[in-house]
Length: 366
Image 1 (cartoon, helix red, strand yellow):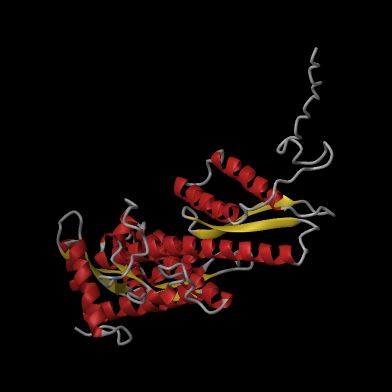
Image 2: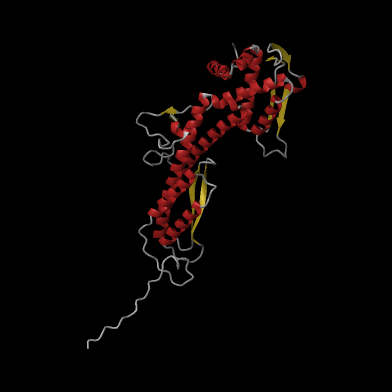
């Protein structure tokens, strides 16, 4: 069977097999299409996928003249013409819609076609959605299996499906098991992060195109491996940045350049949003206030208290942030007690003044 030349024959065979896994009915529907119709669907799916990936302002695709479908009443196969007015599909993002993505426009059009009362349109949209998702999936790397002596990106103590990941992506690793960076510059680290985010977004987009893809092992293995690596590496990377913040504070402290205020933007990985966020910590307000390490300690304590009352974060993200705060706090444990002058000091109630002892008169010997 010849299909579109751009798709490799082995890839076509692999994807056709997954058709059968999803159900004999869908498999027969696909196999009963003529060679010409099959070539047409694969070619159109490739064009649509390319437009999605390039976020093209215009997308055009066509449907075949006829398809073979299964009559739901008689359960028999018959050929049915696709209505001529629907064969050519054209999508354009107007001036008002310029902020919308090509993906959202394509998804909406395919959903409209699939919900059509014309069975030929519904079948055509169903086949297109299937092929777009599988062609997209096969463009993504599979990852590499773990060696026996290699530490996994997610600790086995975490009882989550992600802890079962048996593959990883070495090209996107940021921090090794010794907590040492695997990148040579911040730009390289950002590039790896961007690649992981793009790949994860692609997997989520495939789920929207064809939700049934989540049942396939090829999808699950990629999704589980990437999610596990992104969460673990995101946490390790922000902890590495936290150590860099401590180093920078120490450097500026030695040069006496912290006396006009200090605010920390603490990076952390939010495992619900699946992205790096920042927590603003004001240590010393702007002004001519001499920096003391105890200012930093109390600021950390105040943030820790706020986190305990914040229900927007997941428990694992909160624990991750608390760990970063501990990194900063334990780096300044040698600060000398600071005795403020004046009751208006923010530390007046934190460091209490010593209680003077009354002089006792010695008893006289009589």
